[in-house]
Amino acid sequence: MTESQVVVGSGGSVDASIAFDGSAQDYYSGVDQTTGYYLIGSGFTVGSSALLAIDSTGNVGIGTGVTAPGARLDIPKPRPALQRERSMACGTCLVIREW
Image 1 (cartoon, rainbow, N blue to C red):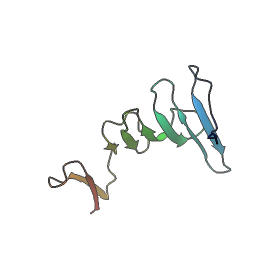
Image 2: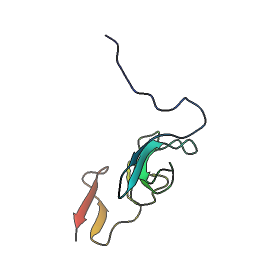
Image 3: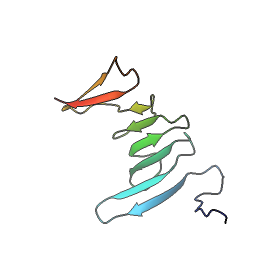
Image 4: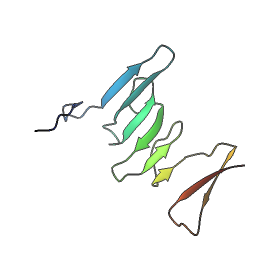
């Protein structure tokens, strides 16, 4: 038995994406050819209004307008009700606590 898959894109130098056309909001999911990041964002244009970005090393950026994840989990600007801290006991984990 061989595996099946759906391939989006042709391997060319263009963005490859799937668009979701909603009545209130539109979203895309795809690869930005310029950066090489896998993005999920609002609208139809890959690379604009990104909400989530994953780079080829596995770094993940979450948040409105995220452009380049710089760590395993990168939240560019914490919301006023959240605090980011690094646990010395854990070393590599990110703890998010409500204030």
